[in-house]
Image (cartoon, one colour):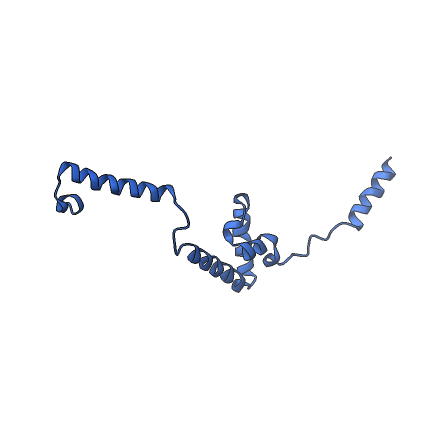
Length: 119
């Protein structure tokens, strides 16, 4: 039985993966995911891993890749924020409050200067 364990252990040593070779952090799947789909596509549980990969990638000298990812993400956000995409609850609340204040001022006969420009 001990011979079998020694043979199996020797196979692990001989055919094991060499962990001394360090991979390029910029070729990690999280970096590729951020490059393809944006930083917001990274799962919440992997955010800390992504941040450490960004630091490692910048220290390795590939800071242009990270700058490109951040620039593409900013441009994507800018294009999406040009117009309101849909009716949000914040927009609906703003409309209700504005219309409510307007009609409340009309019903109570409050002058325009008092309603919108308090002193």
